[in-house]
Length: 75
Image (cartoon, rainbow, N blue to C red; front, side, top):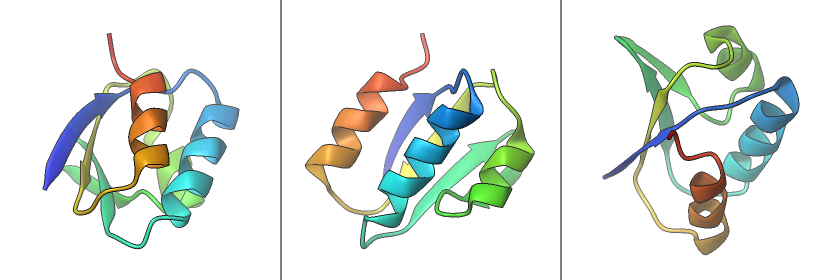
C-alpha cells in the first residue's frame, strides 16, 4: 500500500482525479479524518468537500496516476 497527501482546488480537479482513478485496475481509497471514500466514486469524492488535505491510499502501480498525484500534492 502506498499513501500520498493531496488537495483539490475545485470540482474540475475532483472530476479529473476520479476519471483517472477509474482507469486503474487496483483499489484506491481517500481518507479524511476517520472517513474512507472510494476514489472512483464522484459523489463520494465531492461529498468530502474542497480545500482539505486528503490521504490517498492505493494498492497498485500506474505511471499516469502517480504523475497526477504529484500535480495534486498537498503543500
